[in-house]
View (cartoon, one colour):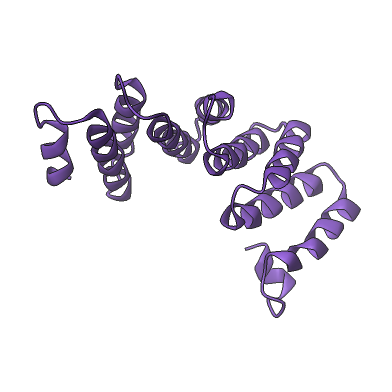
Length: 173
């Protein structure tokens, strides 16, 4: 944390270095249990003049995740939506924001919107790493809506993203 703070306080440091240091310090603070400090650092990145768009997108995703962990689903949804709407953001970041948005919508008991968002994320296929959680949340949303047959169809589709020998029970952990 001290090293990142030194970069943040370095006079004349390029905005991209300051943004990276703030984001990394935020991640370190969150790891150490300082959620409010992490949120403050992610906010500072988002507010930093001349911060690179991808750095701002990542900071908003991280802040949204921190809000989600604190059960502030509306603030999380707002951050994820900001990334989704951001012009020029990478498909990876847009996909992660779609995933986060779907999770927040699920927790806000808005399953129809959550399913639609997860389906958008699946279409985007931003990264193979974000597909498994998408399936898990999509399946849970289907089950919450009483759509067991659709959930079963989705579980059968997990074989594309999981090793063939992974038991179905382990796929939803």
